[in-house]
Structures are given as structure tokens and as C-alpha cells.
Length: 128
Image (cartoon, rainbow, N blue to C red):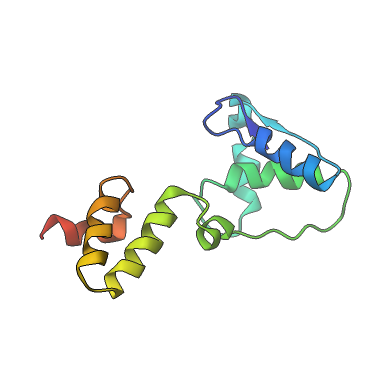
């Protein structure tokens, strides 16, 4: 699934993975006209869902339907594998909170300036 906005478009990386593993790669571009599909997308979920993956997941399923009857989907890979900077920051923060000593404090001091602070930790820093 791709987007015209390059900051959201992961098609170039998907192509690299497809080439590397010689998969049968298909691409779908989500365009601003997505608004016409919003009622169908909302109907596809059995409960209110405002996740960022709702629209891309709908188009993945729609495209896959042309080729297969059943698709398994999963969320959480980025969280588990630290695919985004915020998850790396959370993991490092968690490790350093358990550690003690001058070396760990210095590492945290240096890293805390360059890594984003997850929302769940922000209130603790605000009152420190």
C-alpha cells in the first residue's frame, strides 16, 4: 500500500524486500479520493476503530481478495522489533531505568537529548 505523500509511502522499501525474497509483489496507491470508501471501511470493523492502519488494511484486503480467499494479518511488529524511533527510545529508557551507576546515568543523559520521549513517560519528567 502506498501513498502520494512520500513521508508515508513505504513502497520503495517494500520493493526492496520483494526483490530480496523474490515475492510476487503488488502495489496499491491510496489516493485522496479515499473519502468515498470511508463508509465501507467503517463498516468493515465490528467496533469503533480509529487506528492509522484502518485505511491501508482495508485496501490490502481488497487487493488480496483478487488472488486469495483468506489472509492472515498481524499488528505489533514495529513495537516488538523497535521499527520506529519511539519504540527504541522506550526500550532504552526501560533498560536504563533498571540500571544504576554513573555510566548508565551518563548514557541516559546523552541519549535523552536525541531520542523522543514516549507519552507514557512525559508526565514523570514534567514534574522532576
